[in-house]
Length: 287
Image (tube, rainbow, N blue to C red; front, side, top):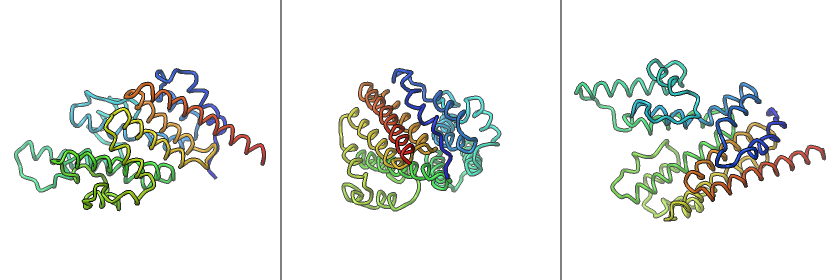
């Protein structure tokens, strides 16, 4: 049975209420969570924030870490040292980065090399390696969430590529599955996906929205809705905590783009979390 965190789950809404939404510090909340869960579960929390490390690796490869996003597993200095002498990054990531560096050296020396552009695209390759790790993770929530996340991002990428017209869709698709096959082969206006997943209709409505604020709000609501649905039957376990952290991350990003809407949805998140705790607590007392 999964470890239960009654006190921590009960504390989450109160911790957020102590701050105005615009001043909420997600990284402080992550640190608090990690201090109050097991070491094994803390690794899952860190994995949830791994996309930040991927983006920072890309930033360091492209502009020498001049742009750096806080909140990942590594600080700026730690990541610089790790990239110079990889020790703690996942084995497949280290192998790819070594291969990529070798290709770059050959290119700078004017040598010919036969690697295709796919291998030479660090953004696609690093995210593909990350999603492969996520989809084989021991935690069901992580597997489900990042499968959903990859599918959504691929559909968005294919939609934009088709809209631009002069961009190859395959250069922006991560991974291989039934969805990516449809995105690469279908000539239908919706890539023939409307019946493939129950969220496709809402996603397509969001993508076809011209107003940026409205579109981002719809996408955030879709993501948060999936997280809520995925953990609807959970109560005090790690998955509830992971979902809360992920929802908070989504809504903080939305607040940066659409302040008023993002703030309202953030307050709603806290309220829903309190209601969920109250319901779970009442159910526990009735048993």
